[in-house]
Length: 290
Image (tube, rainbow, N blue to C red; front, side, top):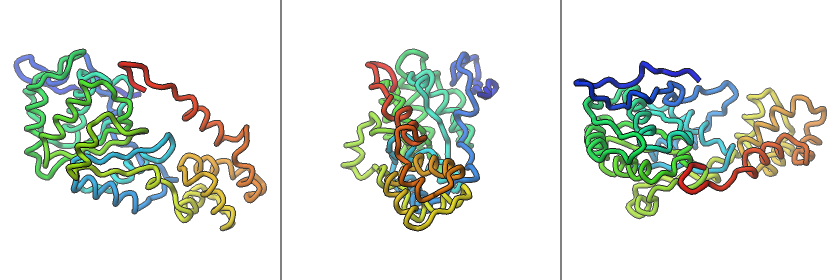
């Protein structure tokens, strides 16, 4: 993965807003590109856009392969307002790692953040003055900025999540947070929900319709009879990864209708994906990410 070590944020008088020993990987603060086979789904893009426009917090939840990242990618590519992107991983589960990436992403998106922000102490809870000044700077953003955190479920450290909640609560209306997660993230969603400040997009929303599944097949150069397409969508329950795996496999199968009927077998690619990505997920260990 390419590292943008020069992307560290400089500050005067020897003070750094980003710890000097935290290199910023450009890939982690860059929205993924839209692949040629992607199906643009306006109904999902509109749901995300509506949430980002009117709510401080938008959460997109669904199992692995539900299409969360692709939905965010397609929305970000079409969004006219400023979007900052952070792809979270288990190594970001410390304030001294997460906040440098968040600040770098915001600056890269064009947001003006004072360079004299005090450092988030590595290995310790983020300094409250840092969070206070960051929230103050973001609250003044006009037009507002949207921070995307992809795979927020990987962040479980209370110091990271409490800091994120603090900044979000105090940076409105200049900041919106849009996050994808395999489960409800460990933020006080009930409070946002009761205040009417939460937009929720669930797996049922992300599920492909029959028409969208047909578009995905077409993007892969596949054509299915209407009955087989309906059966495939029903069997996969509109699961994005299952449909794409089916489209990839369909090229080598002589009978599309029979292929759909035999899709879920012990040796199928679909079952293999399920076993590897879903059934083998171990429960999170105490104090670590999942």
